[in-house]
Length: 231
Image: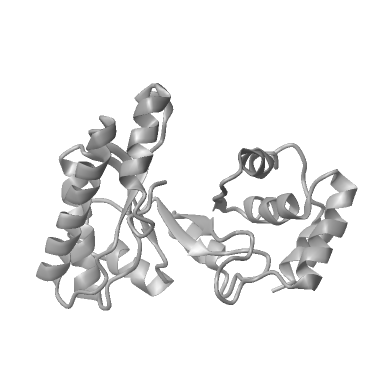
């Protein structure tokens, strides 16, 4: 995942090129920010410009299509959101991207797309701030019933309102001792076991390895309930 907000897309593309990893072994996602608009037409225009800029940035790494493109934020009203989505659908129709995603969309905002009779595709992923410290309004359930996978951003407590206090850290660490896992691994496992995916970031390879090592154990119902009550 290369974020336009972080401004790391060209560097990401160069790293992919230099890695010599085959393109078909990678799943590459870009993002577009086009939420400061006030009409269908403006939203479509700005979003189209955004995905075109994505492709230009990725092209420095000889990447000529994306596996996914994500709207970082919803526009302020139904018409503008539909304009954003129409631009994404055109990108997909041109076979420049395989799947479409959104980020920070509420159930109501998702329904602006899903209930649009003219829409030709639906979001596959909704990236949301979600962790054992922050999961208001049953977001996983609300998205799942719409056929959309939640991907947690800041799953280890970096989001506003979701920072891990001393009690949360201690509880995760204590539960982890039963499974031979770290507190961070327990917090990530709770998300995955609840039916969502995670998106983590780090500058240290060992942390990436640790974050991926969460699929060889299962939290008990009691531990799941304990973690779910921490927010």
